[in-house]
Image (cartoon, rainbow, N blue to C red; front, side, top):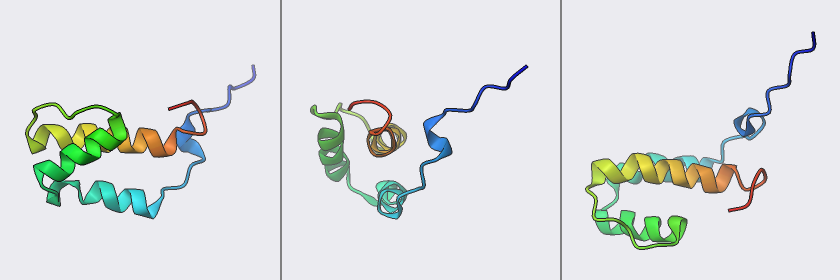
Length: 74
């Protein structure tokens, strides 16, 4: 039997240092800065969340936008 190739997008994409630094610094940003990032990455007004709720979701979205654009449209 032939093994299927692992086609997950993360296999061949190298981390972008600028993006990694942005994500690492999310906890240091003000809630207003997080809201601005949310609007630019999600294309909508930010929900009324606290920082601890924003950070993992924004981190995921930033990675999704930067690392998945070659695989599928935004």
